[in-house]
Figure (cartoon, rainbow, N blue to C red):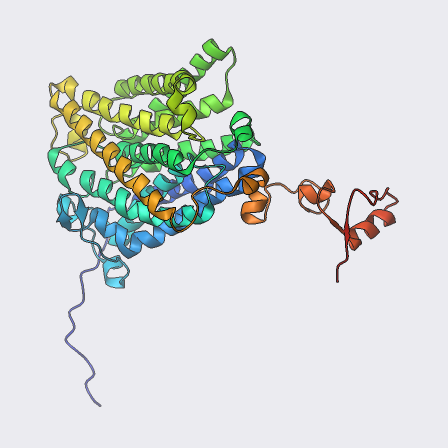
Length: 478
């Protein structure tokens, strides 16, 4: 019998150590962060908008989640976490071979070697990239052309998000300088808030009547989404030490402390100013707390988290409820859900407060060389945090309008006024709630659209009054 053996050297695959729990925790954290986007933010958006936009608002999240994943594995992951190409970007490449998926992970430009397979890290970082676009979509709801959104998502991921991620996380210039962004206060929230605001200006506003009357169609549903977002943040911040260690536990606890403090602060201001505790306001305060603690989660002590919660529940409240209603700029730019307040303002504040309240012990536990923040005598950290914020803001102020301007030559950025009058049915041919009969659309049930002959026959069979001939047009069906 012929000898068919060959001298093939097998690649090195990742194998767990006897007591290793890092990979299990990382996959768990990634899964709960994914749930923040779908269904978390999809449900929150679907409930917090006007009924005629519930489907479109939720579906923008589902599309972004899918499109980001394919773009991520084809090119963007290595641009964000691969070997350095230039100081702001990694070398583009795919991560689709089985050998790569099974190999031990490394982030070469940052000299990091997390104890997990590369496939786990690729997915973990993907859910962060995805939620960035999902957050941004909140600024565009109620008028963005879905075809334009389809083109914009992969382009913005490549030209904007990847640069921020590599610069501050993947070993780029900001990482080397010592800018702290524990879990995405800058990379995710400041970037999505900035891009959302400038993008809302480029796209144009909703219909005037929608801006004046945009009541939530289901506040309880919005609370369900908010709850998924809050609890999912345990994976969002708790997963970023890349290890099931003490710093992950501190990050989770601090995240919840700051969020609770921010919600209570925002609600208290609502009660003083508006004389009632607002549920929508509480959701906004929850979000600003989650955002502001994100760059600091495992770096600050619990009392620092309380201070961050107080600041995030008050300053964004003022920017949204005072400045947002008085400054002409906010009247002109239609940021539908106030993403600039809840994510850009809160993310900026969180980053600066990280430079103040980071502890030497927290930095050491996170395996970074920074000697803490200003409270430990390192006032320079505040300066570094400001540089990081200005870079993210400037990069997005350039690339977001440029990409949207280029897309506008291919498809309109905004739906037509006729489509905006109708909403979901015009955009997708579907409506959120089947409240009449066996699920026929509301317009048909109210006889605002033509009835078929079978509909008229059914009405007669039930002994009900048939609509007058002049009210409806009977359309014969085969």
